[in-house]
Length: 85
Image (cartoon, rainbow, N blue to C red):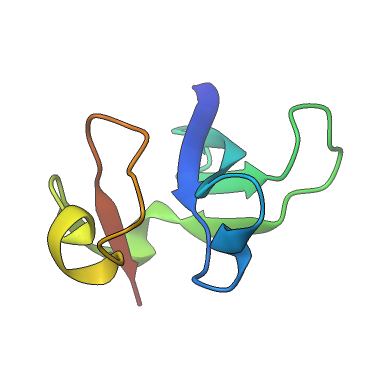
């Protein structure tokens, strides 16, 4: 399965243009990995993690309340957070 996610930028990077950056992901159930790359056509993955290293999935993370400054407008309707080992 392939698609894209909107990743919240670091606090310092949010000052430029938008609050988020698009990241393309591949969920490979055959090899049991989750990978992402910075552009759709990029040949190299930025990160690949085994699904077994995911220790927690938060379907509604605290981003909208706790981790984002009050003046930052969230530009998506749903959010989630993954925790890895």
